[in-house]
Every structure is written in C-alpha cells, then in structure tokens.
Length: 189
Image (cartoon, rainbow, N blue to C red; front, side, top):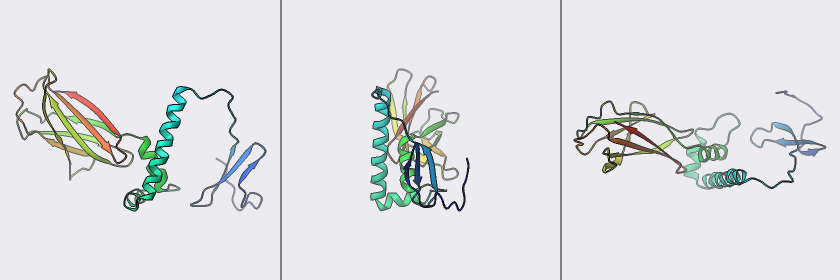
C-alpha cells in the first residue's frame, strides 16, 4: 500500500473527485482513497440480501454497545490500532464462537468425572453448556461448564449424573458469546 506523508494536495480532502473517493478516519485522521463503487443494474441475489441483513443487524448491535457504557467499556479495553469499540462489537456480532476441542478422555460416566472444552471467540466466550445423551438420544443431563481458572480458553464440565452406558453416549456442547451467537458441536464417547 502506498503511503503519503505531509502531502498538502490531499490534506483535509474528503469526498469524491472523478472516480476516486477520499475518506478520513475519525480517530486518527488517516486518509484512504478508493475507486468509486459501481452501481449495479441487477438487483441483489437472495444470498446478498441475507448478508446485507446480517450486516445491518451487526451495525445495530454495534450502536447498542456504544449506547451502553458498561458493555462499551468491555469492548474499549480490547481495541488496538485503528479499531474502535464499535468496530470490535460489529466484528463480534459477525463471528460466532469456535469449539476447538471436546476432551472426553476423563469422562468415565461417573458423577464427578470431567469433560474439558476448548472454546474461543474473536472477543469473548461467555458461556458453555453441555448436554449428555445416551446412544439412543435420551437426555441424561444438562448443565453449564465453568471457565478453567488455569487457562481461560478451556471450560470444565463436571458430570452430575451417573451414566451406566458410556460407550455411544453423545456430548453436545453449545458455546455462546456476548451478542448471543451460538455454536453447537457434538462428540460421541
């Protein structure tokens, strides 16, 4: 990317000249130049409408974050570079958590045995819930995992009920973030 420093020609410039659009970023005053977007004569596809709708909802979420000083402070503490709390909130809305690992190696089917879950998000995972079913799909228990104090990427679920037929059981994990995006993943024991 080309950079221009102390250029008196574009200093203070914003708007459109010919086919170029000049934009100034509010927080640091940097000027960005791009080609003017072309107008499309064909209407948007259904897929494009869905993307536009999701982005509109993300912007509304970002605005609601800025209006709530408590949540805005959470996002503001994690911004870097040219980011704003609004930008980070919009990105958080658009990205659901990722369940990277469901470790059932210590799940014996006995009450008190532990399932370890690695769940990440571009901002923060706020809850991880676990459902255990038998091989036929009958629900045996549901509960919330707690964050591992030794490693905040991991969550620990402590089984509350005995499961006498462990083999073939299903562990269904749901990870949620602040904008209430959810990711569900299943592991067969």
